Image (cartoon, rainbow over all chains, first blue to last red; front, side, top):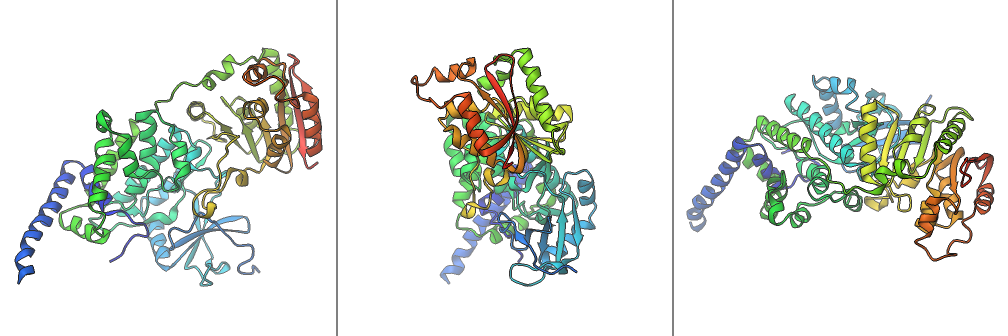
Length: 48
Length: 476
């Protein structure tokens, strides 16, 4: 994984999706949705 | 044959990106690149978007030179070395007016948009990526370009907000001058500070909801997440180059509609309201023009206290480059707009208080050079400024003469106006001070101090009888 010399800031990267308009906001929503579903999906595995 | 390492001086402001470093050798501005950066440079030089930006002067003139003449600080040879066109006078964003910072921001976005469309990006988004050639902004950080990785947002967005967008929002929305904020913080204004300034209905001002409040909230919320994780998640969620381009276009649209909300200061109308008679003005203009042509044409002229730029323009007829320094940001903004409209190419207007000039900034105080270390002019104009510093700011005359003489290169000329205590403008300043506070503020004492530091070539008293102009050679 190639990383930039500058710390771009995680929050700053996500905000840019919203700055990009409706399509961008949809990407941000998708990102959150995936995070949420991943969290729920993980729970049973954590217990096992 | 050239010996490696001779006279190489590394630019102290160029260390943040270890892949490339600016240095000076043989009077040239050079940039050493490591293997990866050299590969990026070759891709850049072969790209479709870069050569037109170079040709238009929007990106600083750049050409490759033989790398074997120079060594990197660790002794390893550079993979490639580039030679840059020299910027006539290096300035910092906190010395620019609102219009200058806005045009610099727009150029950065234009360059980024061109890069994104061609599959490239810039690694950062700093105001320090830009410099000026007169009133024309120039993108100088050629080392910032790299091929874009698909599905990744712009890494320089936060820096762009902190050093360009937020300062503009401060002046446009709140009427607060941004210069002290940028001067105090080399990395600009963080979103958390901005958020606290934009409360209540100010939250809804253009650009504020997303770039300030959402940005600040997201930073706090995702402080623990690594940027590589977030990049991967964004890519999976479908972030694309088109979205990155759309974001840049929207920021451009926002920046373009920002206008300054300056408080009108009395300096704006200074030339009109000050007490010059037509005779005084004509005599002063003749004196200044004669001083400019007294020797070989000066390469760099500093006009200290430039106001509406009347004398800076006269200087530009005879000099290579003129830096017009003025304290009031609104006055500099007007001057910048006027110079651009006139197509004047040789005058750089800057905002600075001569009683509080830019100190060294950033890491160890050397990353951003102090004004005193940059200001070495062939000719210095100090017209109608001595009384403001000596009476208005209590600077002792001897130190004031030293300050003006130090701004001249050895053998340089100083053109200075002494406003007598009986002059209406000096009287107005003295009226605010206890009588007898400045007993040394007299024409004879000023002439004595000037003669101790310089060789006075000639002097003339203006027809009004309350102002004297001196032309002197420093160290002569």
